[in-house]
Length: 80
Image (tube, rainbow, N blue to C red; front, side):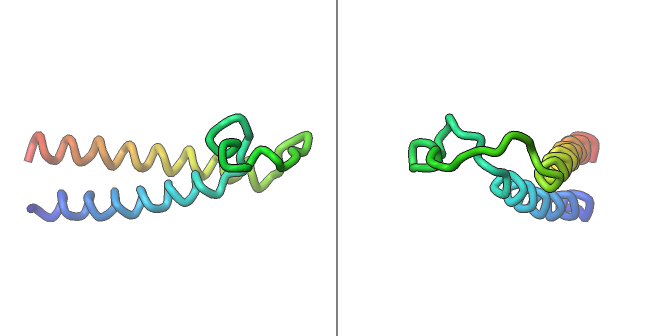
């Protein structure tokens, strides 16, 4: 393995763990699998908080970085 492949692979693993944690930090909206296990009992407030909106933004940014890392690995494997 060359150093760009190894570096991008490590970065991809780190981004994957962080993205998973960000997704798991979100509040459940109901109607999904969380209702199956008793998550539908909670009441929802009218709006979303600032923390939830910032978490949404961070999740989208992390998802885009994760996707860019995968595309970078594609180019490194194809042209190296």
